[in-house]
Length: 227
Image 1 (cartoon, rainbow, N blue to C red):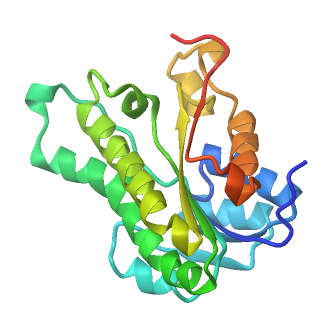
Image 2 (image 1 turned 120 degrees about the horizontal axis):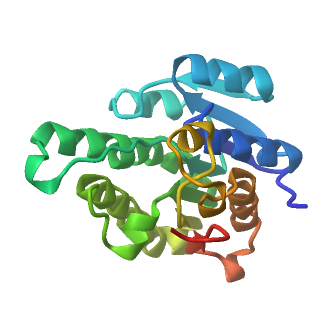
């Protein structure tokens, strides 16, 4: 089992299906947690998991950076994001902003919040969750979502190359399929084509416990049977 007893982890998107599975894995590994999210989902997460801090904030708002800088963490696991589909020819500027705000701007602000302490401490890991469409470089019907998740990956890879000499590493997790959630089951997706969120959570714990000389920068996790 992974051991994170000496680490404080900030988990964004707290209360979401993937974040809940990750929080359970982090708790089992002995990590101290800072939960970041919104509203009722965050409240549910805080009731279920012990946390040193619980921060209710909109990560698309620049004001969130100052809130996050009040806490010191060793690791950031960013699961906050959103999904939307629209035909390319019908996409609007508002659609674009919504996807970039949800999937890239939230990460940018979270990183700005945690980075000063990590750089001062010369140690840190920043992990973000991208998407299969971004890994493949194509998302028909969801071009804006795909582009925003690709931006997340490019940003974290660039961060890793820029800051690894200063002790801060970046990593991108690519779920190569839909995650098995009640919402996705209600949408009619077959369980065998979806990824077990507990398996993804174990992958996150594996990434976070690698030594510097065996660091993982990108990890693709597949379902048993792809669509």
